[in-house]
Image (tube, rainbow, N blue to C red; front, top):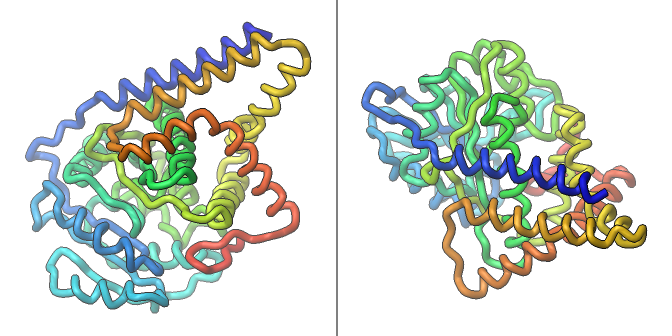
Length: 367
């Protein structure tokens, strides 16, 4: 049994080393790689975050005449639309309302993104969320990779740490995306993440775009697989400091469960094989307990120690700054992560089992 545990941990450490290597790679961004870019954002009830998102995009180290930001207010019930009006005079920002054409088989976010893509003028489409903040080199690094390699490109996103629950989410996101980046970085396509993704506009249009995707809870994964299937385009990654986005964590447990249920259901429809991996991840704490009960104490604690070390390595590979209290939350989250993961995924399974549908921004999402 100890050899099995060592084998699993060795594979994980290899993936971390690949992640570290990809993190250290600098994307060449000479003057030849400056395509006109379109950043597409759907915003619903984002009054607390939309300004920070747009301001971070307007502060990009990229020629101002080489990019546009298209934002669709998806019938927000807060002050999002009012805030967006302040940007209407900015030549780099194009604001749209929620009167996009209804496409029955798409969720609201996919409908809006489909509409924005039809309005966009860029050679490269970049996707992010209204609660994300991008570093100054994001646009240049992502666009350069897309154009030079003709790829769909993803980059990591990490939640801001402000509480114990957010620290647990950070560990969760870093571990999951760290592995995705590692595997995709060696040429095995996994998935797209809609808050930090870019692709050639030509490939998007040739595939038929969001309108050609099937009904899905995860529109980002759906468009990723569709474009690859229809055009044969490769999948790549960028993981240096400049492309790592910061997003807002879920502040309530019910919101987190709903988000995870949506991701799970999307995984079932888009890439069922990967769901087995995530289920195995969720059940690792059961394996630990089973090893203890079965008398394999050395194997159990070797696994637990290895997992804690791995989480530390993945998280310390990313740039971040913690307040003292946030750092305390983070260390606690690393140690208690396995229990959190089990409880979260068990709750998601129960919610799915009783037929509950996930929500996005107050709307029920059905597939």
